[in-house]
Image 1: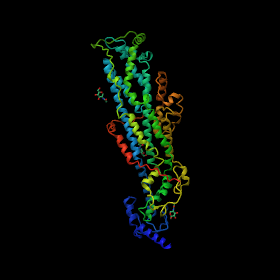
Image 2 (image 1 turned 90 degrees about the vertical axis):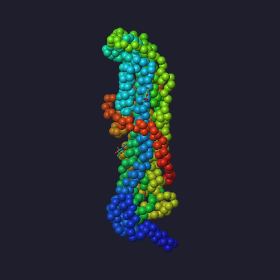
Image 3 (image 1 turned 90 degrees about the horizontal axis):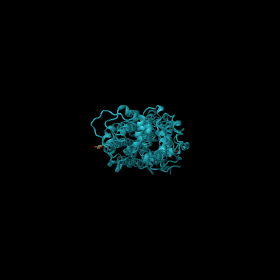
Image 4 (image 1 turned 120 degrees about the vertical axis):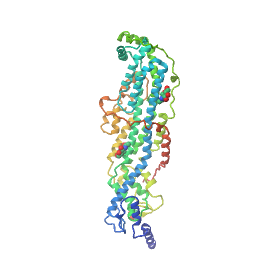
Length: 562
Ligand SMILES: *[C@@H]1O[C@H](CO)[C@@H](O)[C@H](O)[C@H]1NC(C)=O
Ligand SMILES: *[C@@H]1O[C@H](CO)[C@@H](O)[C@H](O)[C@H]1NC(C)=O
Ligand SMILES: *[C@@H]1O[C@H](CO)[C@@H](O)[C@H](O)[C@H]1NC(C)=O
């Protein structure tokens, strides 16, 4: 018995140091991993009573200076590991964010094109005049979608106000020559009383506001997703954690054990301790993924930006049709307000009354495969795989990177052993009270802040409160006083669940609720230009993210908890 023990110890020692009197191997690794200059190492093992963390009864290749270097290296290793492990998730979100913004812009152009084509085909002469206002309308829509705090109702109304004199001149009270400037202005300003386009302007404003708010919310949420990942990528590790990492990663080196890996249970204790704050994100991150799915599910019909944009030309057609049908009433009202039309001297232009239905109306525009809805679904399918990312991070790092494989002898913090014998704690802050390896004081304040932001956006995503547009920017910039501004906006039951009714009166009411709070004076928020990635985006970013997910997906859920 005694003999075999002595033999075991002797052979262990021989394995450890190779040549028991030299620190060559340790020096080599120290140099290769760029931990520090190799001159730092003693030539031969020495007593290590002055060491702070890597104390041992046997001789050591370490000095106090080296310990410091090792600690820096251990921290660097873990930071690199954290960034590597989150990179595919970060990439998934940022690619899709760019894709969504690019697709908005493509759709906006298509919609403008359709609208101009409709005007051209159905309303001949008026088309050229209307092109300017149509362009302005779509520019305003773009700005709104990109984050400017424009009042949707205002810019839609302005468009119809400008359109009215044109429609009046061509279809309601046609005559030779254009209306005089003064008369045009009078007709224009009579629009609000005469209501020549019926409920269409309010309906259009409502649809743009609702679908735009959903679209913008999606974009804001993805920005926040990236911010969360970025925050955890650069998390400050506590002193206790850094010491524990040093002990786990590099103390074996001091004893010549450059190949050893920590035992699984030991690794879990250290990593669950170090990442305890991050694990607190778990429940909110899961909810975030779920809430994005909820938002996406609501984004159909009048809440679907794509359908709304590609339906604008139809609404416009309806609006002009309404004016023509009510021509007699409108003419009478305008005459009452402005008198009989005064016109500019005649230019020899004949007035056509073309009214054929355009082919664009008969064949509804089909959303392509590349449509927002399809892209959203594919994105969410990929994102769902990362639901448990934060809850499983410590375990994942130990299983796939750090700890020794099952059954092999491993480092327990002081020795090479068959298995780790201490209790293994669970994930999260509370569980760390019993952690034998890392003392955890409490939640990290940076993590606490990011959790608050997640909670907030989850509320918005779930439609529990309708965002004022200004508050969305505050989520991102994190000026934490947003609380009072978004809560309690939702006093109208119908307006909160976001289901779409078509009654105009209700719509008008809702539109005004959705209007940005212009007086609040937030900075306009502009996203980076989208020109660059538009083309790239269309050529298979989804496929690419898909394969990256596949590569990094051995998403192991280790059930080693106590
Ligand atoms: C706009 O329509 C014209 C034809 O009417 C077409 O040539 C052009 O490519 C379209 N542009 C976009 C961006 O769809
Ligand atoms: C991520 O964090 C780093 C460091 O804190 C910062 O420099 C960078 O701008 C951040 N990136 C994003 C996308 O938030
Ligand atoms: C590591 O193993 C040694 C030798 O078996 C033992 O004395 C020590 O208590 C163990 N440490 C831990 C933290 O399990």
